[in-house]
Amino acid sequence: MDKPNIDLPVSYDDVAAAAQVLHGIAVRTPLLENRTLNEGVGGRLFFKPEPLQITGSFKFRGAYNHISRLDTATRRAGVIAYSSGNHGQGVAAAAHYCDAPALIVMPEDAPVVKKQGTAAWGAEIVTYDRWGAQTREAIAAQLSEEHGLAIVRPYDDRLIMAGQGTLGLEIVEQLAECGLVPDRVLVPCGGGGLTAGVATAVKHHCPEAEIHTVEPMGFDDTARSLASQSRQSNPAGVNSFCDALLAPEPGQITFQVNQWLCSSGLVVSDEDVAVAMATAFGQLKLAVEPGGATALAAALAGKLDLSKGNTVIVLSGGNVDPAQFAGILG
Image 1: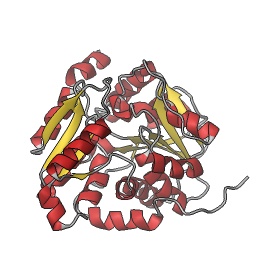
Image 2: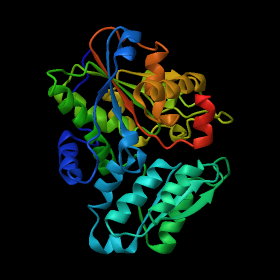
Image 3: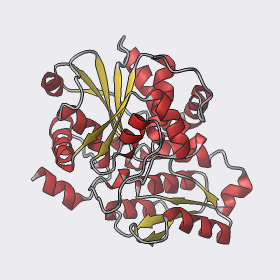
């Protein structure tokens, strides 16, 4: 049954406006194809490599779209974000470009490479216990009030979703240059901002295209939420090395978009992800972090039949700890 047309928290016009803001600032990452990987699934796979983006992940797109639109006084006062690493780096870099001080709340166990990347852009870092009693949202809210900082949320924000949606717009444009359209897009999913933006852009141009989220096992809140059509939380006591995707539940406004535009949620194991990381390095010569490799993991593990049409695999980030990456390759 077709879903009715409703007003969603982010529109295609928002994505198109974000594309204008990001033009000449963000990297228009290429769309890659690999014969060996095509033969493995019996169809055509195209890869969108956001490890090549500024700060090594898609997060810069949304962060810059948000921060660049703040008024001058707000930017000068500074911004604050909470992040497992990639959003923090994106905010730090966007704040640098916009001459805004930045404070980033990060978990103590965030990969060192992500902490170093955030600090390298001039941001101040405050750490917290990911599994402690106080949430990162509460910590950021308190610091925002104390220091007069504007909060830049990682996904539950219209401008953030619109910025991430420019990735989906590029996918459509790049395939069109080859006379093709996407039949399905597989997207790594944490809070759902990337998925919401990509789905908004892709479905505007290609309404028959399927959008599938991909999450690590134990953090399949979006998959369960899509199946039940209501937001579901993850159980306590689970863990995954996909540190970028460990949101406790789907975002409130991101899920309003994704429940209407997504076809299904797929789930992969950490072992599937490790295979995908090694494959991305071996076949595409890309260093992809665990969370960024989940969509490729789903393709390689046969979570969907990809033998017909054109499938786009979003590789959402490449900020992987060098020692961890070496161990996976070894």
